[in-house]
Image 1 (tube, rainbow over the protein chains, first blue to last red):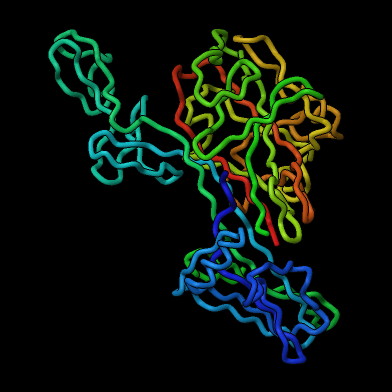
Image 2 (tube, rainbow over the protein chains, first blue to last red):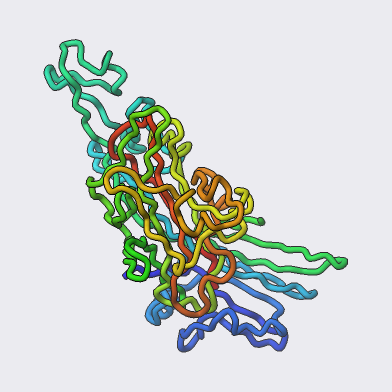
Amino acid sequence: MVTGPPLRYYWVAFYNDGTKLSQFDPITFEEYAFSDIDTTKLIKFALYPFTSQQAKNVSAKGNLAISVPILPIIELNLSNGRKLIYYRDVFVSQEEYHFCRACNKEFYFGSDSETTQSKYPSPICPYCKSHDIYKCKKCGKIFRIFEDAKFGMCSCGGHLDRIRLTSGQYIREKRWIEYYVGYKTLVNGVNHKVLFRINEQGDIELI
Amino acid sequence: MVATVHIEQITGSPGSEAYTYKDTTSGTRYYTADIPDKDSTAYPIPIPTNNNGISGSYWVTHCINVVSAPSTYIKNLRYYQTWNSNPKDDWSLGTGGDLVIGISSSTISDARIFTQGFPSSQYDQATGTVGVCGDFISGSHTYYTTCASPLSGGATTIADFDSVTNAYMVQSGQVVGATTGRSYCIVTQVLVASGATQGEKADKTATFVYSEV
């Protein structure tokens, strides 16, 4: 069965009495819900990447987690009446992939992928630059694209055969997570929101 | 727990509808029949021969199924597709051809904020003439034709929802709490016009996004 994408971060809530609540109990690795956080005592909220042992223990309890120790630590000060915002955006994407029969590599085909400029476009392999070609059924002459043969026929009078090198396609499912953390605060009676997006590579963006 | 979510396609008669799990290698194809097959070559969509004609596929209904519960909730389910330029040009669907999605709001900007999907209790089976043409979402889909002032009669181009920042709001607010269940549904449909080129078209990318804690 397909599960969700693996977690790369876990949260820890720090309280004003010196205690803290971790998303995963450090002894049992059972999970606490976000709603278990006592927001009346909250002074700091942090996202930490899993250590390899933590990831192993959390995964053993049924929550898939992986360790990427190079991810940055995210710590948010919540003093001065700041109200925590935290959620994860989970992406479930059914994506188009192609297989190049020239170099035997698969490649993702997205909106910025290259295709031949033709009435019958075909993807250009990003590795070996191959694409579908046309071959005369009579003399075997090769045409790069359909339009290279006048009237769609070879000069010998033969019809063309499309050799499908890169147009073979299939679907792959990809899942990933973006983490959002920030706060709301009231300044001079006006609500202000500060929100950061952290992707799975650890890039942080203020949005 | 972190939720486990499946994409499902819904076919069949309301009340006894079938939910087909679109797994990691199983996409969706548009036919002139109400079938969930991923790669059949039966029931293609004929290219209209008259200049103003448009043939629709049968509309296709999708939802997500939360099969293991999140620890707190899942909310704000969104949907978008990725194209090189747009369905009409990428798939050479002819003048007036498109890939459309059911819409209940009167503007595209509202469709990115307010719920556009419908609960599974209002699922409506795709209809038409098998092998010939599907009925159009705008004009035939029970939910979208009964909405007040929907844009374009209830269906608009998917090209308006081409990235996560421009995503279509399937279900705003909570989809499920700390429990399992299905989301609201979306319907999409291919429109093929005269001048379209025949043949199997390239697969394209569709993405569901939801917020979870």
